[in-house]
Length: 224
Image (cartoon, rainbow, N blue to C red; front, side):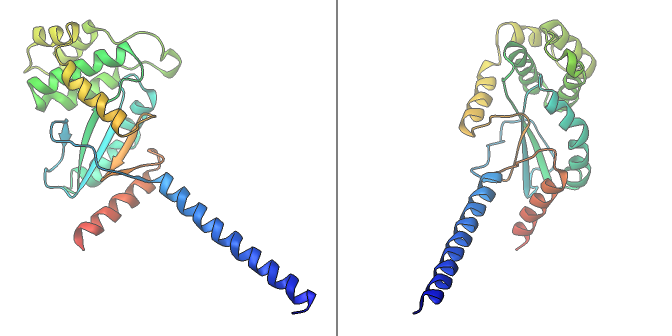
């Protein structure tokens, strides 16, 4: 082999190696973008939708998180209309405590409402997020036991308000909150909202098209 052919061969070999490395890195990137894992258990979590739906959507959220409020107001209504109300998916909520005491108070209250009257949970849940102040006032304290009882009085008429207040002030639902916190750690939840669909952690929870694509892939698997 002359020197010219040797150079061409070497360049071709290097190009092949670069292509292989690129493909491997791309596969790693894709794997990181959609982290496949075990799906969070939802048996005792607040869940809406038909129980036999083939797709399970789980939100790890924090009542003090502005992004969670935004997700609930923009992305979730589309998901509810297109997939939950049509029986294709269920939706479950798991508490995250990233914002300290106020997150914990809201989580204790939500667990109490759910424990007393599951049918009232979602109205209470949405109302708590609706009370969240504008982003520039995000750090102001607004979650108090009094405020949570007031919200429940307006949205969950079937529950015992005294029991709710006791659960908040004495951590009467701390075991349920701890269960959620354990799931946050188990599934390495680092940001809120974190959305997991049939065991796949969504890279960008605000990319509705990507969420729809993932759900449709899961539906196709169920139909195979």
